[in-house]
Structure formats: structure tokens, C-alpha cells
Image (cartoon, rainbow, N blue to C red; front, side, top):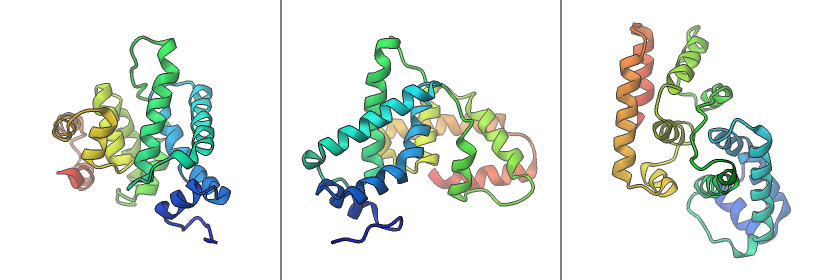
Length: 201
């Protein structure tokens, strides 16, 4: 029997979960709960709705575990499944969905990504990035969020949003141009900006 821990690879967890291993299911849920909830809050400011949709997804996955396919990226699979579920949940309340632009909790994701230089300017930098992100159109915010804060590839984002990978790249480039134009003229911040955003160039 596979020993399950917080260090167990996603693919191993997924295989064991599909075979009915409750420990693997619990580890997956724990590992991705906050990530999925943060993503859900991009669509609605109502935490209860986002949490309910996430709980429904987790229950659905467990009940249908034997029918789930293998996946090269568990994170992508869960993000895609949750996006579909929360959009379905919100449709009765709104004819047209709009990303909320809420980034109150995003600073915790910045710290885990280790993409910023650890210095006295970091907190100020995070606050400025959060503010700038709210100035992007909703589709650009979602693409930037998925690329930088969830680490999805352009191909995965394209599949998630039902658009071509080239369209993803174009959206990212437009977002970066906007962010560059509104970025403060501080040499230190400019250096960090290019160090961070050159990841996709």
C-alpha cells in the first residue's frame, strides 16, 4: 500500500484516489483547496458561494472517482473542473459573468512562488501589483492569474478558457504592455518587474 504524505507526487495521489484511497483524496483536497478557492473568488466576491461550489466539486470527484481519467496535470484538471462548476453555479444569478478583480489574498500566493527579491520593498511591491491587476480587463486578469499565480502553460490556459494558445499569448502580451505603462518609475521596482514578468517572454 502506498504511503501517502504531503510530499507524495500529484500523479501518485491521483492514481490512489481513483482507486478509493481516502488518504490520497484528503491530501489532494488539502493541497489544492486554497488554490481553488482563490480562483473561485475571481468570479464572485461571495465566499460562501465559492466554498459551496468547491465542496460540491470535491464530493462529486469522490463519488465519481472510478470514472475519472488519468491526467498529466492534476492541478489543471481541478482548475478546469472548478471553473466549469462555479460558472454553472453563478449562471442563474447573472446573465454575464465578470471576474471580480479581488486580490486581497493574492499576497500569500506571491510568497509561495518565491519570484520576488526578498527585501524591504516587497510588501510595497505586492500592494502595487495587486492595485495594478485591478486595472486590467477581466479576461487579461484571469489569464495573468492562471499563468503567473497558478503556473499553467499557455496551452493549458487555452484549453481551460476555450481559446487558442496564440490568443493566450496575445492576451498576456497586452496585459504586460499595460502593466509596464502603469508601473512606477522606480529603478528597483522596474528591475523586479522585468525579473518577474520575463518568465513568459
